[in-house]
Length: 395
Ligand SMILES: NC(=O)c1ccc[n+]([C@@H]2O[C@H](COP(=O)([O-])OP(=O)(O)OC[C@H]3O[C@@H](n4cnc5c(N)ncnc54)[C@H](O)[C@@H]3O)[C@@H](O)[C@H]2O)c1
Image (cartoon, rainbow, N blue to C red):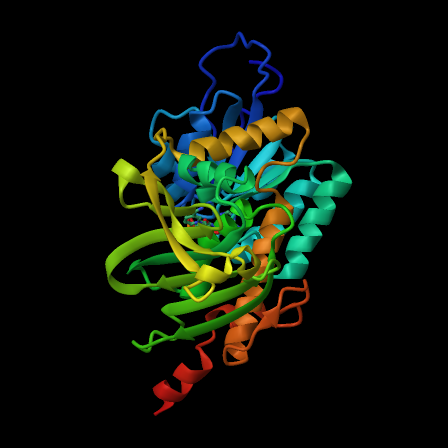
């Protein structure tokens, strides 16, 4: 057996016997996945399909869960001991898919042990914790990546290219709807469950220099679930444009639509329409500057409507998580920040906190200044019933 192979088993773990005693030097990045619940198995599957990665461990507090995910013939070891994973020198990186409350502790321990970290959204539950991870990763020269999965879909990558490349002109509005009959989560409200997707997409596609500066949110719990099931977020952007996100667990129909309006083009992304997921509309409303009008037509409306082509760009079908794993591996190999690094996770978290703070303040606009919600007890904040609804339930 090669000297770098962990062979002995501790209680609560299963270490498969290596198939061969002849080992080539393995240049792949040694990985462990933490969490074998709903999402963890997707990380396991995609890590195993990524040539640059070598999955060594699946760690979950429930070992049976890990064993079930890995199957009988897997060469990946399972354990309940995170310490054991971090002590394994073959492990250069961990991917954390536990509930958000454990993200900071697990990610911090991994960074302290010199491991690169991929952590699920939301990066942590408080802004301080996220800032702490970002600082630690930068101090240690380690990759800290947040799994903002949608940013790795071909459609969002294309939207980003179109916006950053100036194709749509100046961003005038962003409008996204993410509604369906969703699982009412035990630990988070609909805002913290679904809006991280929309906010991470917004963060990813906005052009450099344009960012949210204020957030106001409204939410409701019409079924008395004890947490908001419907929420509307309005974000004021630094260029004066508005962004709006509607998230809802109670809608009988599923809608996944995002519009990004620009001064030249408008993008319409319907994620439930694989034939034409993205449409680029050369349609919109133009306003002619008054000084360009002749006296003869000055009396006519300054507004004109553009009715041009609608183009549906060809997009490849790719599993986003495969791209997530590829980007994580590439960032480690190239010693660079990943596309959705810890700072992106922190920015999204600031927006979520500002939105939760706004709910507390009855929908008031809360500035995104990095301090919103920092003093709050986040666990209470993210599951608190909206003020208006508390009254309704109490009656
Ligand atoms: N990117 C996405 O689209 C997406 C989708 C779903 C979930 N998620 C995120 O993935 C994370 C996990 O969500 P889930 O739905 O899989 O949760 P889950 O509750 O189904 O699974 C979590 C697992 O983590 C294990 N666990 C908890 N604490 C642990 C610890 N200290 N050490 C080891 N294992 C531990 C639990 O035993 C459980 O098996 C969350 O952060 C969630 O937001 C992301």
